[in-house]
Image (cartoon, rainbow, N blue to C red; front, side, top):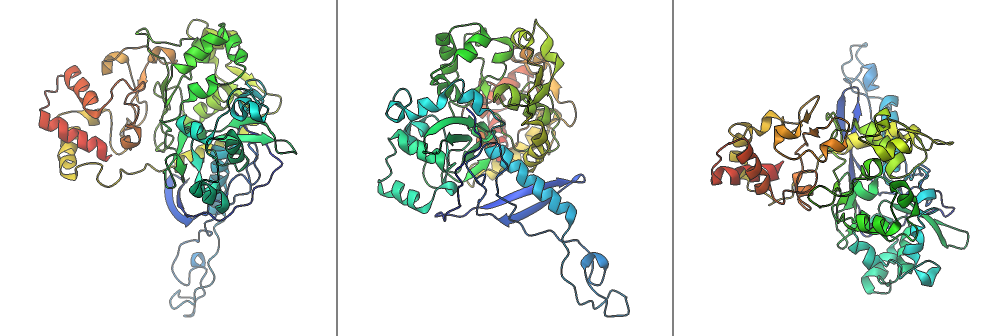
Length: 499
């Protein structure tokens, strides 16, 4: 799916609730926390995927530090220039911090609303928007109602809903079983990670996707699946495979993979909620040797500051992976270079289709990667909700984590991964090599453990093979012969839940 510019402007309307947003400003090797009220009037300005929108930063300008009477404080000295007893002039804006704040806002706009031109693929080639409309609106099939969309794991940004729509949902006058209501939500830019394109008559003509589709969810403040955005949280409810499988035309994937469209649909429907197979278009391996899907769980996009490699198998830095996904997975229009994909043995499909050497006529990706990365670095790790873990047990578990269980040897606090080259062979961690061999380095990255609570849905490890914390602990207890007692395992579980 993809999104591009719409001619319809969207003016912010009052909503029932207000959320404060917090951004971490990363600059000069340090992080400065800025907490500011934000009415979330940043819906991309117009319903457009490729523009940055008109949502400016809402924080007041940062001021420079210094004592009263010093130039950095903007004060004037009333004591013969001694700096004491200054009257304190008006605070002066810090141009550097203003620039950083502007870049953070640009990065957030990209993360939330930019399609990188991928609407030409998801709408133009796959015609996915026709599946949303359904036959009654000039599309195909039954269409996708809001109820069906929520069942597929799509989320709705309540801060994009005008007051009258909120009231209509509450009193039942908005029909949540009608695909026309989904189209209306797209016109409001309210479907997280999806943008619709409309003609002058208001008809849905195309659609696209953004980073936020898979790497954002909502807090369910209004209803399940409807709430304030939680950028960076993996959407473990999202059934990407089923959504793509509903497209009327899958010939683009069938041609690339060298199979028929029915086979493509079978593969896509095997993924299940919260999973995506990024390597399928590179190597064509749709299933693991045990017959299960080769798709992996969607990772979080928060907590990347200080972490070296990205993805479960360490494909590269965050900026590399952003370019990879924007060009190869989202099918945006940009420039991407990775000669490792020229390997015809490891990556036969990528090599045959020159996927490591992408250069669009107009690059809609590369110029946005820097600000996007900065915004991702600003996404702080969420803390577990009250009551999610036993504090006393967690304290005992911390000692086990750092001691007998040896977890901290690799999951080094406070990053909870190794600083530097955080990669291990399959033999070192006691699992099969299937997913590792689908990546250039044939290894697995040490996954950062912070905010595991948001990843409890779908299981742990790259493919969800361990359903519970206890399953993970039992694996390492056996593999490393740790000889943990049941009480120690329980305490360690509570500590992991507390991170």
